[in-house]
Amino acid sequence: MKRQNMNMIAGASLPVFALILMLLAPLSASADDSKMTDAKKGDVARGVKAWTENCMRCHNARDPREYSDELWEPVITHMRIRAGLTGQQARDILAYFRQSN
Image (cartoon, rainbow, N blue to C red; front, top):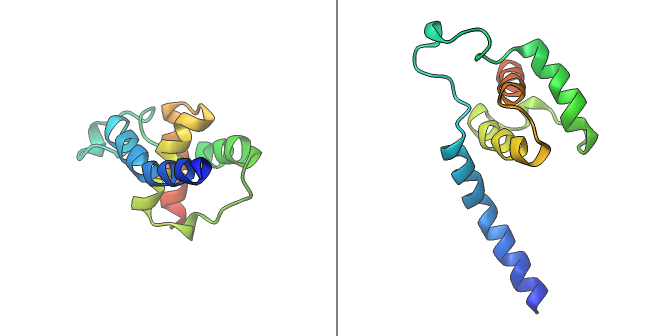
């Protein structure tokens, strides 16, 4: 019984946790991308490399079109924490997924 309750609590708190992470560590670009340096923008080629080197250690290959751009952002933000990705790696992976959609 205790285990069921803990699983229910853990399952219910995941969306809240993802929302908090999304608010604390936003990956979205600013309104004016022209002012953003290339180092801050996501790079698709680096994103493919980071995705294959990091994400595929634990996951099967996911089709970037599996989720919309809006849904990938909190997923990658969550996995940035779990997988220990740098902010640049997360932006690069997100750029790859966005370009692939």
